[in-house]
Every structure is written in structure tokens, then in C-alpha cells.
Image (cartoon, rainbow, N blue to C red; front, side, top):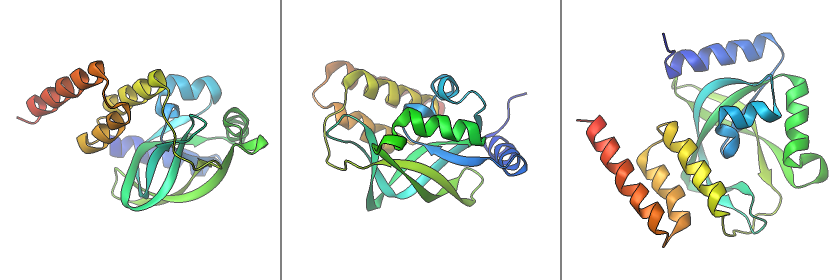
Length: 181
């Protein structure tokens, strides 16, 4: 039987505490299980989370990042990482060479609890333009996670004037409408 989000989050948090692991908030392609476990083979998904007070951006280097914004929120996935995977992750994203900095943040979980976790923010905070395929990958991951439609539309908005994306918006809106009836 499939676990609920609440059960998934509780199990992941308990495992992290028991194994001296850290909880990591992913808001980009690292939300995807295959992508994350490619870089961090011992990562365990702990559940969905929401980071209030930030907004998702693509910086002028084409990298995902977070900018403080008091009226925004970023949706993502929490991962439980053992120390060796946390080190691998830092190398993968370039934290060891100054591309990203590690930040502790408080996220709201599907269990209605708030937890302090780690995430990364790019040092370059200048907004830029997304790489189309990477943004489409991110939108597909966020859709599979059933993130709220306003957040999905915010992500899609980064690909303005893109006909296939506009078609996708219509199909997702219809899916969500029929699943709530």
C-alpha cells in the first residue's frame, strides 16, 4: 500500500534523526527521485514541503535559486541525506567552489509541522532566463508532485510565449478540474 504524504514525511524525519542525517529542501530538478539518487545514492525522500518568504528564480547563469520575497513561497521536496551524500551534493551543485551557499531555512511540511532544514541559494542573485528543457523538466516534476496550480503556473510563466507550454497549461487545468469533481 502506498504511503500518504504525512506518513512519508514522518518516516523520513525519523530516519534522518536516527542516522545523524540532515534534511535537505530541494526546489529544482533534485526534487526528482532518479536525479537525486544519481548524485546522492543514499537519499531518502521525506515528503513535500513549502518554503514561505522566498520565490524561485533562474539566475543570469541559468541556475535555479531562491530570492527572499515576503509574499511568495516555493514548493519542494525534503530529502534525508547521510553525511556522505550531503558532501556529494555540495560538490555536485558547486558549493565547494562558491557557486551556491548553504542556508538553514524553516519549511512547512504536509504534516502541518515546521522544520529547520538545509537548502542552497546561488551566490549570483541576478535574475536571468531559463534553459527551456530544464524548466520543462522542473514543471513536469512539480506537476507529478501535485503542487498547487498557482505555483505550477508561476513556473510555467517563465516560458512565456511558448506554444507547447500554453497547450500544457490547458491540459493540466483540465486534469485538476476533473480530479476535484
